[in-house]
Image: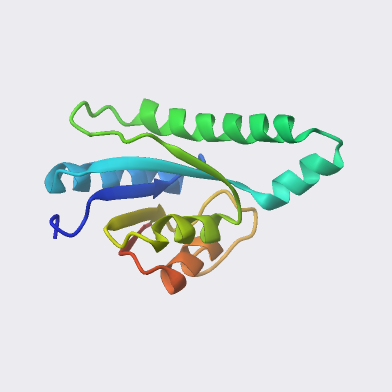
Length: 146
């Protein structure tokens, strides 16, 4: 299977589920000899709220980068594995599910490993809305970690 997978993408938002997904991704990446790329999507709704507060686009971008860096730092501080090949992290602004799908759209050789639920305040008895949407619409292989 590793011949078909060139990297593992792990969407992170600072949640415990995202951290569990990252731990699993690191273990799998070691076995498959592929790199792990962390991916953070700053929700478009947050951008709209910040924009209504009168912040400039540069300030919004700074807030998005700060949120992404906190999520990346949390994963890197919790996972002490010198063997993992960390690829450059990616950030985006928009709908998290749509951005994850967009990232993998042109390259089915990207395995996405994501947590079942993120930081959303809405409770769900089943899958979280992001993981559910990614599963339904992505053409890449997806692993959901609970």
